[in-house]
Length: 408
Image (cartoon, rainbow, N blue to C red; front, side):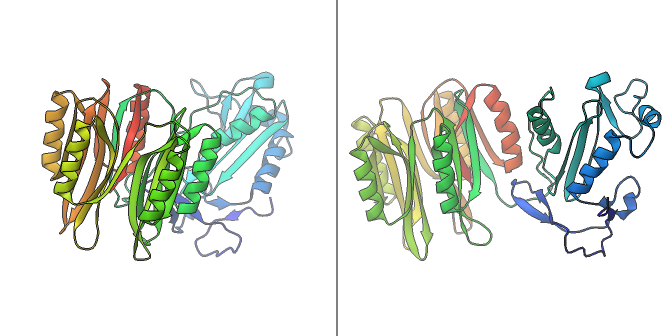
């Protein structure tokens, strides 16, 4: 193991990789170097994956100690699955020996089956990685019967990102995938890729990150209507594309608007065989409210909406689709008034369907659409992404789907 050395802070090894962690937003952050030599000899070393492989081979082939010494070294202690520094499971040909380690910047593991002469080592320069899951998948490909485990993302909830999230869950059992923090081209490519795997975009949300770069979050749902993502369009161009797609049977289900290069641009999700949509745009609050009421009388319900500042006035845009269910629309409420209104409408059998949050003169305002929905319903707000992901998995197991997702 020629590369094995103490990981001193002052080494400045040019071949050493950077280490990373996830903040409470589950965004990747670089971990600053720190001194871990205090762990010697229970840790505090660095090496390469090649030399870790040499070490595993040396253990399996009894090159470091006699076979008798290894048998003693790998003997389980009373009432435990741990031996002298090794995790030990099974016996005979199924004897599995391994060891895992973690510290700032890294997580590692090796698992070997000495009698089968098969071993796998995994080194990850990320604190959220689950190297055991990787090792088990490789062992399975090598013909070893292993019990695979579920991946649990390891966010650092103490490291604040500054973002808050809200989500609306309603009854549903279709599997979903979330994607967050993608650039526009990356998001478009990921939308195409996931669509090829049977997951289609149902909700997209855009924001500017701390470096003023346009980013996208999205909800992709299995067995959803086949969708197409349109982005970076002027209003005229966006409407032309939406109208052209409508002639092929694909209709607007989600809209987004933002400023880029000092121009207001539009984006949206158009889904094949979705209900025919009416797109209303560029109205101030009172005219939009009147349009909402007019379309309601004609059997049209507000499915998605956006509010934005045009430089002089606040305007509203919305997507209306056929419907005759009970409904409600309230805009520009304080956070406290919004929560109270939500409670009142829930008691009337209406559930939140879409939310928008905006800030004016340093004050936060909330708007929402409520419609008659199914029995199961949950609103989560004022949470970080890590908490949302954990609670979202629990809600999915209870038979619920994420129908609206916002970062603010």
